[in-house]
Length: 234
Ligand code: BV8
Picture 1 (cartoon, rainbow, N blue to C red):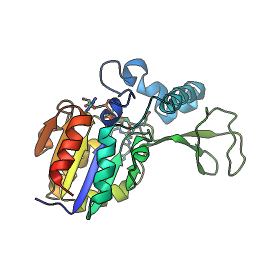
Picture 2 (cartoon, protein in one colour):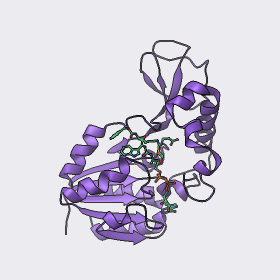
Picture 3 (tube, rainbow, N blue to C red):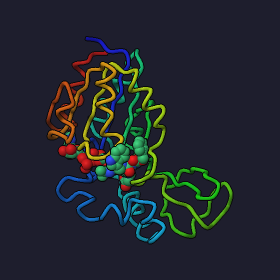
Picture 4 (cartoon, rainbow, N blue to C red):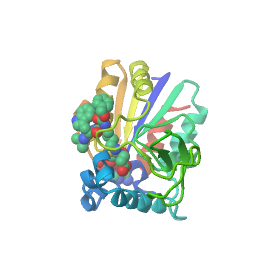
């Protein structure tokens, strides 16, 4: 079977072998931090310092030399560069490892660790240093409100209209390294099924939505993703 319209969804599991922690595995981020304390607008309003520190810690982690893309990221970038049809990589991840591996056609639906957004003018800028209450917006020069360009719980993920239309038109939907706990991303497989697409789960273990996938392959992303994409051919 050759496919013409492919949508890929990735989650924290694809970056796990690069050394970045996941959220819900043992020892994951949500084992150390409560979502409501660090990943909601209410948390940022109540205790901006804690939220700034949480994302400064993760941004610094991402920038460490030993953190780099792995063979799963690489395989996706290589496949995209040779694929003649429509290809879109939608990631829940806020790291930059897909770009580092060469992925181009990419949507960061939950935002990006290395970007900051001005609460006043909305300008989004690249940001690799620590962010805090005194950070100055490079566009409007306001000093009262730079926030991480991250979609928190209760906020609308980015480019949802684009994602929904891509899912409605796809003939292959592949979910990689996500537990299927977070919506609306966890609902994408059902939209793809309704569109008549073939749906595949590549993960370390069955996700919350495993039964919704027509095909399931379990193992480490660095192994099963290159093998699966090789099987798709060019
Ligand atoms: C919203 C940024 C309104 C923060 C994140 C129904 C419909 C709509 C919303 C909801 C709904 N029900 C509940 C909600 C509310 C909420 C939600 O889903 N809550 C959950 C907890 C129940 N959703 C929201 O608030 C969203 N916004 O709803 O807006 C709306 C309404 C309708 C339609 C549109 C909009 C906003 C959600 C975004 C929150 N922000 N991230 C940050 O990063 O700090 S979510 C966060 O979870 C990360 O982005 C993460 O990527 C994401 C999902 O987690 P996973 O990536 O899956 O990571 P996890 O650790 O869970 O799993 C890792 C998997 O990898 C595991 O399965 C593991 O086995 C596997 N793995 C590990 N190692 C490997 C591996 N696989 C392969 N190889 C390996 N080596």
